[in-house]
Length: 226
Ligand SMILES: *Cc1c(COP(=O)(O)O)cnc(C)c1O
Image 1 (tube, helix red, strand yellow):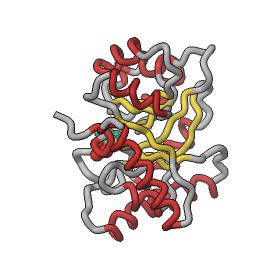
Image 2: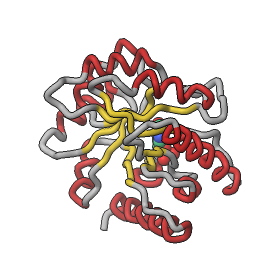
Image 3: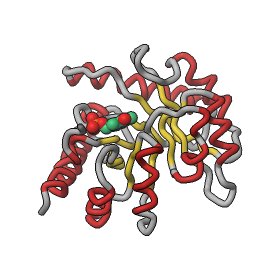
């Protein structure tokens, strides 16, 4: 077994162990391949990994081209500038970081109509950090209302990158607020919401405990980024 496959299997084992411990289904593992080469993506795909996450179009473009023979599910998890949405709307299956109505409108307008709707998550700035993007927790409902009828998008749920915390219970408490926010949308009548995109290499167990359905893991699979 290669080191890459070994690390990937370790992450799958961590997810399953957390799912068992907290009585939750194991979430989908999104392998965050930013900064790592197409060859590593291909190697993991051959072992059975299907969903990969990229953060920058400039970097992703060459990899998507090189891997066009594989039915990979591509997730865009990076920051979105409104003048750079077109290739993302055209080439990805999911976008996790939607934080403004204007971006959502452009993604919908630019999504080719022969493709299925683009799955989107609203990014929540859970801890109100100035350095992070995302909609304030109190504005999630309004943004969801603004994007829910855009024709070529499918609102699937919420995504967050919480402040790094060492303490497990504190990690859990942050993720619990995401679960509550998703429930609030469901209570308001939103349908088809099935996604909490939360948990990364250092906090995935806490995310699973609070009902994560997609964990986004880079370092623990591919090693440290430059
Ligand atoms: C890079 C990145 C990740 C992966 O983080 P790791 O700590 O390497 O697991 C997850 N989510 C987003 C949005 C990222 O940009």
